[in-house]
Image 1 (cartoon, rainbow, N blue to C red):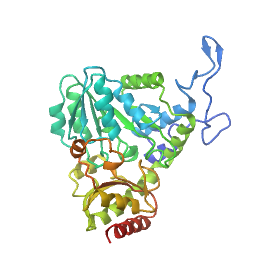
Image 2: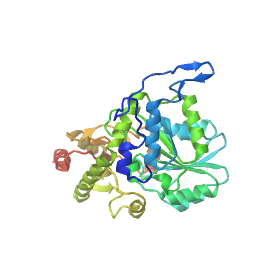
Image 3: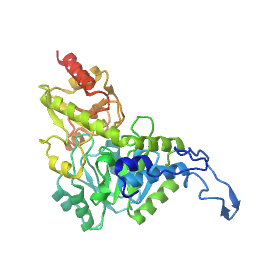
Amino acid sequence: MDDQQFESRAIHGGARTDEHGSVMSPVHVSTTYEYETPAETRGDYRYARMASPTRDELEAVVADLEGGDHASAFASGMAAIDAVLATLSPGDHVVAAKNLYAETHDLLTTVYAEYGVETTRVDVTDAAAIESAVRPGTALVYLETPTNPVLNVADVAAAAEAAGAVDARLAVDNTFASPYLQRPLELGADVVVESLTKYVAGHSDVIAGAVATDDPAVAEEISTLQYMRGAIPGPHECFLAVRGARTLPERMDRHCRNARAVVEWLDDHPRVETVYYPGLASHPNHDVAREQMDDFGGMASFELDAGVEAASEFAANLDLVALAESLGGVESLVEQPAVMTHQDLSPAELRAAGIGESLLRLSVGTEHPDDILADLDGAMEETFR
């Protein structure tokens, strides 16, 4: 399928047939499989924590869409991230973004710090800062691009070069972009992480994650951790993620188109102080985003010219746009990072990550753009009248 376009691979990648000729692969719920003899299995499977047909299909789909040779699926995006970090050893050094998903930040600064892993935080939009931070003993450079929640964009190829200079691996969380818009492995990353919960599954009805790579040694480490730690998705979750992947291109096109309309509206509104969206020419990383992304995504953040209370009120006044965490579903969502997803960060950590109290993060859905804009306008009127 290497010669097919992404849209075709999203539908047919990883597809298998059974003896009945099913167009959609059946969901295999069995946890265990019969042996012919104690020393010989009847087929390719023994026990579902090791491997199962439905999970194998999801992993084949993810590897194909990411442009990698291998993928391992996990019970959540955080389980996938943890698997990448679990390849580290005491004494290893990590260079990580200042701006990270809050739980990723906590995992590095609490759990893995206790294991003897040292982390240096840098502005990953500054390639020179990454180059200066890596050193002998650096095992991993870890970043998101675009970042959560202020949508900074890192130059993946430059980060890969800096990591490679000290034989470190580069891992990229690609959740905000999805493999339809950006494929970090093709840009030089060693590992890519996806929260399949978000754009790939796309309907806010499944939690799952994945790690993809084209390095067989990394793939072996990750799959061993998957089996030993047991944080695997169930067959129904795998089925839903595969089904979601089939419509990823169409949904992402709509997410991007709606986001552009929303961002233009926000950028012109007198009550909006700053808009964070890599598609804006004014975005400091716009040129890098334009070079390495096929479009600029469905996520947009903005700061109101108001305090934390007014920002909270605005978010609560929205109707069609639901006030909820997560992102990437067909429905539009809004959240206030400083008091929701990133509430466990200290004021100093919030400042270091560029997260203001009045910052709001929008996951722009696939509704009609006029309805999204009408809801935003109504909430503005109600909040500031």
